[in-house]
Length: 102
Image 1 (cartoon, rainbow, N blue to C red):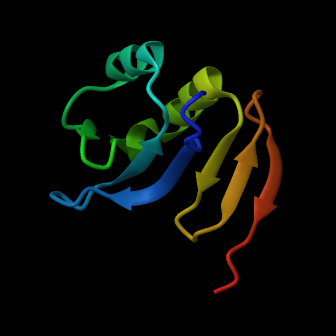
Image 2: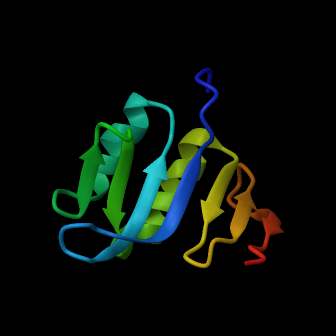
Image 3: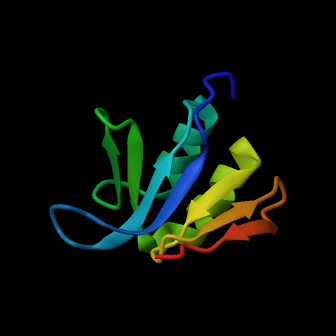
C-alpha cells in the first residue's frame, strides 16, 4: 500500500439515489481486489464513485466485502453506523475499538 491511504469500510451508508443501506469501501487501487469485487456483485449492488474514489456496495454483501478487503489489504478499519471504529488485523479478527463519544 504505497499510496498511504487508509483502508476503510464504512457500514450503514445509504445509497443517495435509492436509500438502500450499504457499505462504502475506500482503499488504494488493487486490480485483483477490483476484479473479485466485480465478480462478487454487479450494478446496481455495486457502484464506483470516481470523484471520491470509493465503492458503494449493497449491505447484502457486507460480510463478503469485509472479508475481501481484509484478504487484499490486511489491517482494516471498519466504521460502524454508530461511528465507532473497529480495527481488524490481517486475519479479520478485531484487535481494537474506539467508541464514538458524541
